Length: 196
Image 1: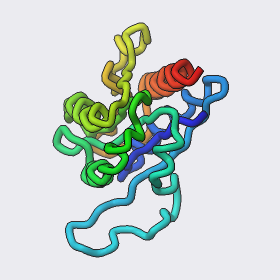
Image 2: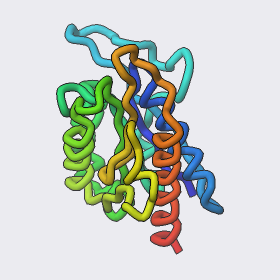
Image 3: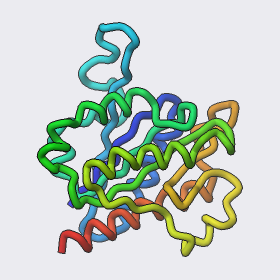
Image 4: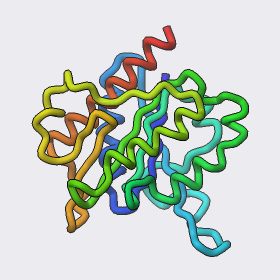
């Protein structure tokens, strides 16, 4: 059973969170993570990226959505919303919506900002909206995770997050890593229960 960890990352912060979430998924017996990304978009009508990324996770394909037992969706924050490449990709899922590809699958969200109050929670909430339209079962991080109450960096009940700072440092704090793994673990546990 695989959980799709799908993200867009420009500076590396969201990619690091994705790997921590994947680690948490891997802690659940019988469940593994499938890391995928979306290509960048361009303001003009030309190819914005090669068909295969030069490094990192491969680009997502429609079969990834069909084959996954759950979905973790990540994006950097852009003015309190997901980044354009992820939104563009999500906007192209009309046939998956019509066929119910994601109906009943658990989903979670994650993000990164440059400042503590840079719109993490609004981004996480706005990323949930298309997932709800697709019939996903949304999960977050419950306050039974003690670090959620003490973190001085990222981490919210709405999903995992990271504060990169003005230097755009992709390294997660210990608390951010713990919470990202907890989200991955929770998502995998729910997927495993639903698929019994």
